[in-house]
Length: 195
Image (cartoon, rainbow, N blue to C red; front, side):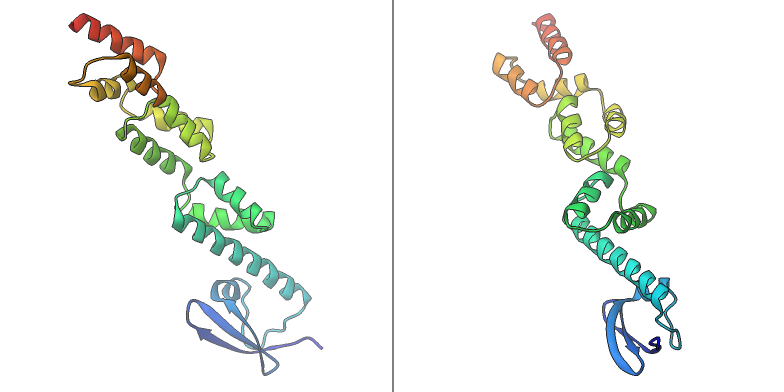
């Protein structure tokens, strides 16, 4: 005999206590209950149970992704990698990430632009910014667009050097911070002409 849902009681934290045949069964995420249209009088047959299992896996992946994003902004690929490492199924990962993208929470372009701007303000050159975005699993195309949207590297380098004497150590520091050889040569030439 197929069990029948005889009670649904709302709990704190977006959860629902489900009764089957008059006895407490499980406490489930409310969104999973709503998505499979679980209601009093509904039979919990095999197809419904399978659908419920898929929804629970999706809800677990979404909760894990949300916790990961609470700690730090992450790219879609980084989030995918973290969820895979945590053992979430491919379908659950895909559904969770798609839901977060639809909500605008996961947006690689926005993440890349914000991170590139932050690093540029902290005195990094284009190469270092691209490398940082690559470590965050941002695609090369999105990273290139984010870097292209920045103030030109030469302008940033000149601002960093304003009021300083140009030394080999200072040039090495700029090189270590990802400023290109062309930018450093242009800065050196500009300093030589001013002297």
